[in-house]
Amino acid sequence: MHRLARKGDGVQPLLRWLARRTGCWVGLVDTAGDVHAASPAEPDSEVIALVADGLRAMRVRGLRTFVAGASPDRSGALLTVDLPGDRPGAEPSGLVLAVVGPDPLGTAAPADAGPLLGVCWWAKETARARRRVEVADARGREAVLHLLMSGNLATAHQIAGVLAPRLHDPARFHVVECGVDRRAETIRVCTELTGGRAWIVRCPVYSDHVLVVASANPAPDGARPLEAALTAEIEGCVVGTGDALALRDTAVGYQQAFHALAVARGRPERWARFDAALGLPVVLGGRGRVWADHLLAPLTAYVPARAADPDSATLTDTVRSWLAFSAGATDLMKIHRNTLASRLRRVESLLGLDLRLVGDQAKLDLALRIGALPRTREHEATDRETTRHEMTRHETADLVRTAYRAAEGGPPTPAPAPFDALLRLPAVQEWALTQLRPVRTEAPGLETTLRTWLRNDTRLSSTAEALGVSVTGTRKRLARLEQVLRRSLLRPPNARLDLWVAVAALEGGGPDRNF
Image (tube, rainbow, N blue to C red):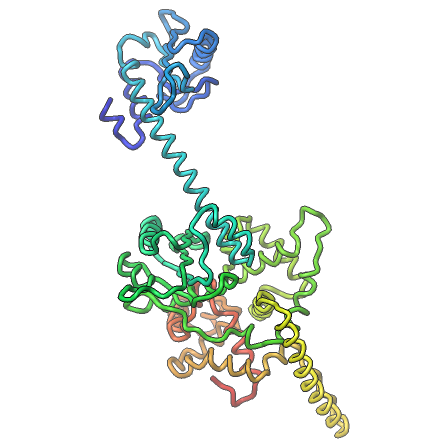
């Protein structure tokens, strides 16, 4: 019995041994008669009735042991099982060992097994309670991360203050890629290396990722940065690290770290930091703000017909998560795929977009990122003034061109679409060149692959067919482009939407703008 009790789950082995030893049905039941463990597993109706009668008699008479239905064919012995702890001896534990058969007390085995069953049951319940606490803690941390991604800093700080540790601002985002079965080890090592001061979360989308939001303070003299220390401590892990950013930019930090992770996979040191560059939402300035506000206005002003339907904020969070994680948004938001599809159709109808097309996805993603930029009175005033001057200059040029064309008898030049006008801005052209120049300088042979992939809405099968190569060959080319561009392409969140904008900007900027 002691050997069986030392097993990981000693309850069931002990019950099976006791059933063989006594030749009876043996089970652990509570005072309500519910069977929690038994051998054989399924008792018949007579056994259940006999045990119920015995439990009722024990409860009425305040007994700790009882023999029910004493007959030559079948009787039942019921013994209260004591659990370890501070429970007073007179207080029942709520657990009863029931032995039902021709001679349940023919040996002393039931009485001897009772204390061991109590210890094993207590250990099992303690482990189960610990797992519940761990799951609740993990979900709480995941919720804080989701709040940070959505920009709800006040609520995130409140929950983090309870769970500990506190959130650092500014912070640096790390994505640690490890084996699926090594996340617990990775979390333990991350906790040790950061002194328990980092916010560590199991990624809800990728089962082999651990997310770390750590202080942006530089490492002490002589100490390795966290990403280098992690790869040294955890064999085979890969780490991508973003810039030091304010907490309100956590979503940006995650995407930076994810892009750096794609680069780190191809490096012998197995870690990389994001190659910082000015983001397109900042480059666009005031004109971008006006364009984004106009595009998102129907979504921002949307009020559902029923209180149970998703509101504007829910739809915005959903489409933002979908643009970043594709189908993985269901895991991130804990919703069914049909719910996701329904919300996306609602967004399409509100904004007049076709989200099957990468071009429309890129426009919506850019508008949402512009809308996420912090607004201040100073910035809004500057944006309005800049936009007024820029729009006046462009509108004047359009009017002059139209007048000349009309005077020459030709058809008037159509006014450019607002998004096309944004792509022609000199700052956007320069940004696009910066994004795509590595392809021309380091891997010119992959330029066709990149353009074909974007033209086919980043679908691997269609791209492979257009290129005349296999899907595996196309995937290998894109993996090479990840190293050249230092951005993730094959796993979301990836850079496909920024790349679409960059290619569209250069294709509309004249023949001398090749990258």
